[in-house]
Image (cartoon, rainbow, N blue to C red; front, side, top):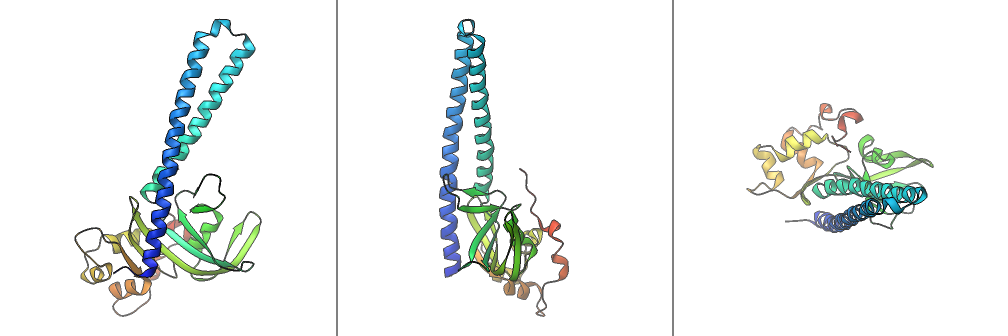
Length: 243
């Protein structure tokens, strides 16, 4: 049975996925338009080359160059969007800054994403300053260094996700950051019977909500806390991504 927290997370993911697909569609249309503009401009220049004076030739070449640059930027953006469509984000941090009335929610992914014309980021790049909250701090007092200076406050919530092809396989709510490889091995691929109980194991892909305590009970029956060796330095916990 899906609880209220997971239901809200799934709904948010669905909304983000719709916006990602819309952005991808718009970029594809822009790429098609840019391609046609470049082809038409080159044909015009070739057909009328003898009749154009040097200034007109230079202006036409400049227009073609600008169209190519615009197309390349759209292509680069489209590649990033396609990666986010595969896996929109992998982490979330709710951070209450000292100078804010309420906590802000930051979803962390391999690239940033916002709707066109909006400054409101739906997904933050894992290399952004605010992402350090996810990698470097547990729940409690924390800070990140923004361009305008250090922002101090408290982390209220930390969650990690496994999302594939726009579907949430599972989510973990934890006060600490768990190494991604450990999550893959222990939560996604394990055949341990105790873990199956907490994963809601079945023959199809699982989509469940876990807590840190569930993980401990499954793999550390004595009730011990997580072993220190699953938490490496921040550098070792960064996801492997390509630009």
